[in-house]
Image 1 (cartoon, rainbow, N blue to C red):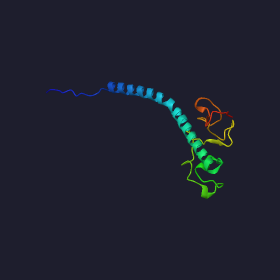
Image 2: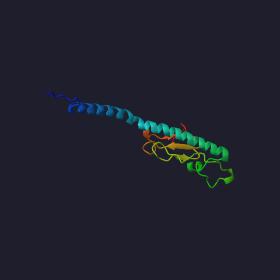
Image 3: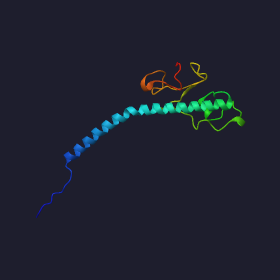
Image 4: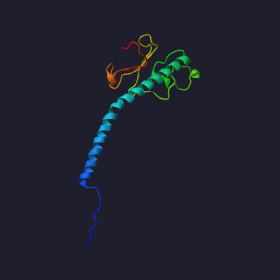
Length: 141
């Protein structure tokens, strides 16, 4: 009786492939991990620009800036309902890290307003991705 040898992978071959996949996954994860905060910072800058645009449109329509960023979404009580247009933003914005924006009228350094994110750490100051992101480059706190 002739014996046929079945072809398949040995345990050692499978283990080598698993180790190679693990090494490749580790390399990919380290490359991607550093870009997570970079993407959040870029999204935050884009959202600040959108909020600033909404603030400027509100000012054009009502001859004043809103008291709060939320007033760009929902009609504030101090605006005559006949003069209210559809919201200037679809929803209340948050920065890339899920924190609310800081909004001040008047702004610092002669700016009409400040819109800023407190960065990844959610606290004033910081460096790198913890640094505050402003709507302007003027004087900061």
